[in-house]
Length: 346
Image (cartoon, rainbow, N blue to C red; front, side):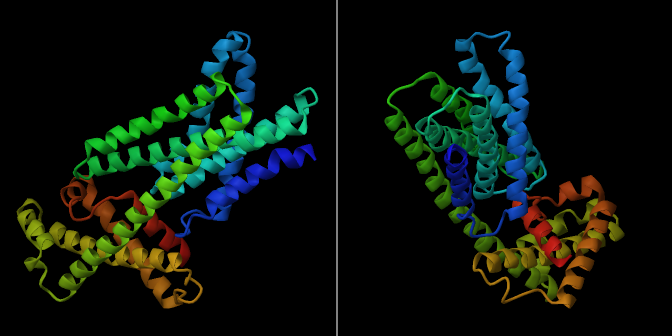
């Protein structure tokens, strides 16, 4: 009974967070992998705490240990962000919550196995409230890492970076350890503490959900319209009459004729793959993936286009790709959508 009380609420938390993903951004396999990473992080922290316990006093540990926990839990999330596996707030929150949930699962097992006769009330409190702190803080860290990666990509692509986004990135990154330290340091009525934590983390989750849904729809709708218009202008031979055509014409003299031809082909392939990948994201959100499967011919065409796209990317080199970055934007969301499409075709 104690083990059920310790683990079931965490599983429900993870499942509830996972169900907000209408876009199928995170697979079940990836979700379980992040839970496993969280359990490994808990094991690492358990070993490190044996060492820090010999050096720090109990009061100092209340400040140091939460920060160390957030750093260790952030390692798999940093890998996901830099590999562009999480590109929106929703998928970063899901992965962060999964890591925090996995951490809580193993931590609760440690307390049950090594503790001195914990009551069911204490076990439920840890599972309901402390697990929420771990999951919420990891979700905040994941969101900050995702946003930071996005800003770096925009900067490398010579796109504007808002100061407000930079402030938000650092604010989120600092918020997680501060919240965790405050939770470990300031104790008051357990029921009020749970209500406060639940309201804070729940409110943050609701805000992220609505903010991100609006951002994803903006990326899909506006971006898809622009890409469709650009693709139509390329295929119908009036690219020169578009802003993209004017830009490409302005850099034409900077490249040999054969390289400029490769650039035009590269732009066209990028647009075609972008349209296809965004369309599949919209189909998945609508729940129509099974009703509109990709045909074998469509899969073969997409894979061949992707192969040619990567060959041209390598042939052009970094200098040429940076020059045309305002046209072919190296956006993390674009990259992930394309990788998901390629995986579906395989």
